[in-house]
Length: 515
Image (cartoon, rainbow, N blue to C red; front, side, top):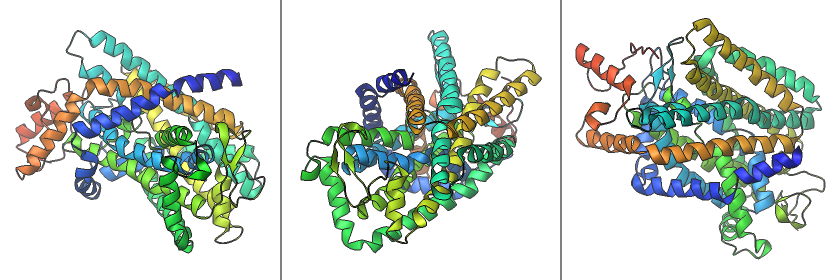
């Protein structure tokens, strides 16, 4: 079974997927006029002053829900793994992926907003890949094919986020907690399951509230800690950046011949962490209350920066500035050790690199600090995964007429996610990561192809936003004026605004579609 999983993982994460994701990112960067750089002021403005309503969360809460999914075990263990198998140069390629992926994130998350709708049972906004794949071509002869595509995408996301991917997070928590405090993984699994149940049975608003409290707090502490370590070793700062850039282009003698591995592991772990193109960002993006879809596209573009340029970089700086890492040949721990560094013998690849780095600052704090960081990062990530699974279950529920049956399906979904966390916390790390990679890769294949086909409405939104801002207006979305079909939520919203003579940017929370 293990051989089959490894083979499937290799097939999913082939060079084809890497080229597809990088190519899409480069294309969207050019076609949007480098929006991920030009629109940074708009990103900041929307995060600070975003709208909110009874049915939709604020842009900040949506950002935190998205970051809850992006910032997880991959930001600690994943970065350490990338350095171990790709050398320090892998960090540069993680940065490159983030820059390109930010444009991809804008496209997919803006599409999530354009084609969102209201849940008839809860009133909450729902959207995501399945929604925009179905709706974008609903008025064409391709509608039957796109509907099948959407159904497949919804099922794949449900399986990935409810079974494959939570195990990585739960396993990371149980391993870190056992290493720090010698707590049995079964006890950790039980505590995680109880905490998860308390939050997810409270619905989207409770998930958003919890994420908006925990994520910025833990991310800030982690980044500040990394900066303290970096400035403690201030004499190493030129060396750290020089090593990253030289290794990235095979100009570092110690890592000669590692260019291919640096790109592979940097791209792979970067994409796994920041999730750009995987189709996970559009769901929390659609939950936000905004007057124009582009606004939330900007916010989710910034989420990629926070995840990779800030949190992943923090991990890399802790590891490289303290020289607490080793690099293996062949992309596996059984390969020859190319570089040992100052890392003590016996420290395995993963969080142990970060723990050892922190111990150089204050002996003994590494295991406990990393365990707490992973605990909070991973827990909020599992919450985000559940939300993704629930959103896609809600999409499939549109064909279920009985309201009690729809609620029962969501209930079963919650139980399954809790079970998957328990199983993941007590399984082996290798199996957990392999399944997680398969889940992330499978959704990426389906989603990136889809957004390359469906991108035009998101491009029109960006053009329309810029045009309204240039005219001194508060951007407000009118899909019919832009020739965007099947954006039914926004058409109804605009109709209500005209009836009530509301100004641009007004919050309209009375839209309630029958699905």
